[in-house]
Length: 629
Image: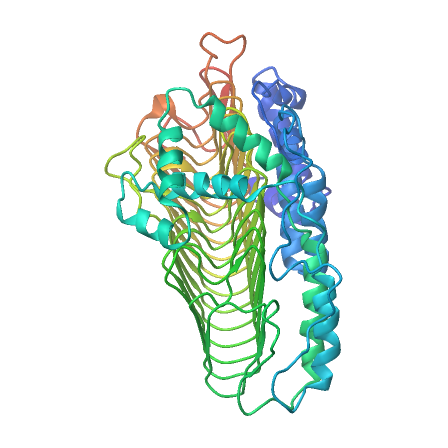
């Protein structure tokens, strides 16, 4: 009978094609809740109890309607599958329009206007003369001029340079922690941060009363201009497509005369591009980009490379693909490429917009911090279309989003390796573990400002994900973090906080849609929710193994909703501390209500270390259940 049921259910098409949960999944969720004398409506218990300036509407919506989390995840997945740059960028821009401005203090200096931004805004200026040397390139003249005009952005609000420097300095000093890691101070100073400002910010961050600095941060963020990603991508895509019909490339690099808008045209040979440029176009060859090439600071930087095994190198704080109050775009059409940054880069945006797209080849991505799709008050997008790729990161990246941030890492083909950790010790929890804050991680500024949206999407291949503390579909403080892997035999390894976890008024999702997968973690992992939060791990098929120590595998803590749902396959669930894992809820302690915890396995022969029996339902303490069908 059980075998026939498997066949019949396999033939039923999912009625909820707009969700990562199909009709059968939802039916069994309702049945599991019925075992607790609950309904789906009970999942919407109140989780909004904090302050959340700049919150994204979808993040608030999911706290009240947790089953909308797989719906939003499916939307991002569909966008990755049928990827179109202009359409994707428009949706990003729309989400920025749907952010809340609640609880933000009134600005005191809105009448002050920024000076023109170098490389972006030149009021009344004509488009630059294209090329310094003859012959000119007539076919490129028109699209470059059109692109230049499209880059003429409106005035960037009422943000003074002093405020801009303070906001950026506060972020990077907190991220790099020069007090604990003295060598990082030199990198900050070399990047132009005044030593006096650095000392001032460190004193503010160590102050007993953090309120003044927090309120100043909110007020500046409210005035910070965030570039329209849709407009940027439309302009650059027009220029990129115009290059398809061109084959009369120069024999030596050509550079235009305009000091305010530098354009460089490379050759079919192996070129070296030194220093910042607004546009670099290269037709082929094994090229090197260094010393600020591809870095945008208060301006624009765009690279279009059409072929070759290229190297994008960054030695300072800002590497290729960094946008600090600017716009950075890199498109690499082919080749086995190296993206290596000593600190930030490879689609990192602070108060700006960064987009890195690699169309083909086995590529290597290496950076120390705030990189590989990382955004704070801006948007960062990293897309790799094919190849077996390696992503290596210290922390804060591989889809990391802070306040007002959106970060998307999309890998569409290949067997890929993602590692994050090994640089910054997690002194807050473990002196022998490292922070990762990666692989679909978003965080707000507790207790005043919400986090953003972070999504890592991998569409196929046998992939490996390795993190330490904070990673793999996790979020903190009114934020949304997701990791979705659409196929392949995958391995997920981490220690603490992740694998589909929501922490402190937040939502996290890990969804794996196919293959024989292995999940290993220590605590607060694998469908865990803590403190008015939502956490889910969804696995659609395959022979899967889950291992953890405690607070894991469908665990609801402190008024959270935690769920692990495995749709089919012969699976094994190992947890060391059975009184704190596998479908265990909590009573809410001194709060008025508790948590909900569901561990559901719908098809296959399964094994549990904590009392679950194949084909049976087991009530667990404090509003929890192991539900096996």
